[in-house]
Image: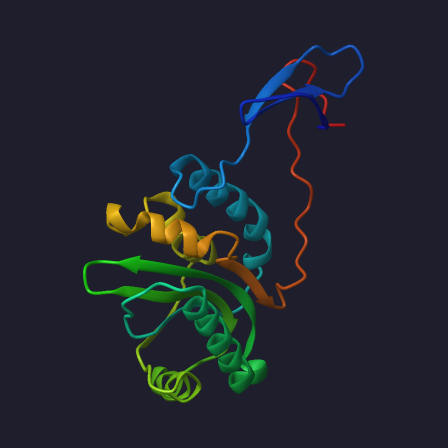
Length: 214
């Protein structure tokens, strides 16, 4: 159904059902902009799952891939961009064996420095882990730890890639300010290959009063 905004107050939108004569209204919270906000992270999880589930359900050979870089003392945008650039070079090396997918960049800190890594869901033919480790070492200039495994359920694999949104970031409280500052405006989730231009269908919600979906 179509909801029309009629009011905005204190990070909340009041929407009205667009059906003529229907008085139904609903309040929707706006994003606060904080990467560590549990409400915004949960909303992002359901939004992204709803958006990409139809696309990944058609994967013929779903795989789960983890790519890592060595721990660093400081979290910087340059390190996040470096990981993304290395991943792109890896896709070029692998060529048509990787048809497309969806990835999430996850920076964590467990007391031994910042560990920035990628969880990716791929539609790909057989990729030997030894070959992936060698190629990853070449494109990163030293990193070699990778993990790839068959995803028996594309739906479960997507849930796994997005799982970090369902919990608080694995970052000590005194470093959450760094996490917020460095990652502000940085896109951490992105489709690639065949999914790059994927456009999800409109989300349809029936009005609880008039049942309209128009």
